[in-house]
Length: 72
Image (cartoon, rainbow, N blue to C red):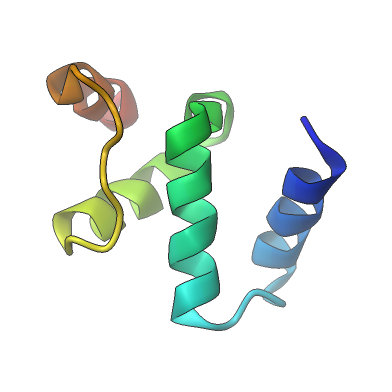
């Protein structure tokens, strides 16, 4: 994990990441990198909520696989 993403995780978990734009960008980055799968279920649920709202895109040629992984 890069220090940048670790800092973002810490900001998110501490409540310092307050703007919707920051949160959406952060979760899109987690999804694009695949790092979302290495994190706790809370991150998966938030990503799913953002995806259902159309705020993040599931970046895969097999979105059914990603959604089932995130729902696990």
